[in-house]
Amino acid sequence: MTDTGRKRPWLAVLLALVYPGLGHIYLREWVRAVLWFGLVFSTTTLLLGESDLPTELSVDAFLAASRGLPPEASLALLAITVLSMADAYWMATRTQHEGAVADGLTCPNCGKELDEDIDFCHWCTTELSAAEDAGADSTQ
Image 1 (cartoon, rainbow, N blue to C red):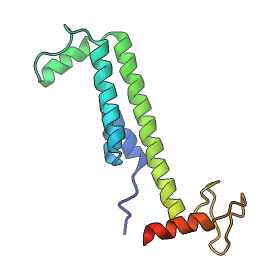
Image 2 (image 1 turned 90 degrees about the vertical axis):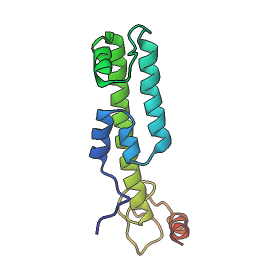
Image 3 (image 1 turned 180 degrees about the vertical axis):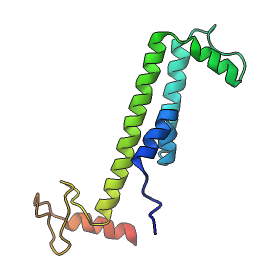
């Protein structure tokens, strides 16, 4: 049985490559998705002149406008896309790591595998009683 709470980092990155913010929608990070959408929209609006903006809502109009992008606008949109991909990857791996910590599999401090029989991490000596109490409260 698969865990539907686990998200694939590579899929989040691929979606963010298609359009910044789509990877965050896949991860259900709604606020971040809206921020990435807004960043792309505002960057495009600020870097394009009013004469370059499409007057109609069609794919052909947007393709024609994208061909006329100045190099600095293309570079800015590329940078936003790369940063969105990196953020989507980080969010996906962070979510997976938090899930593993909640399951009691890894240390919340160093991330190494834990022995279930002891109350501290034998790698970094972090006390685990507080982390286990928080995990027990969230399951009830």
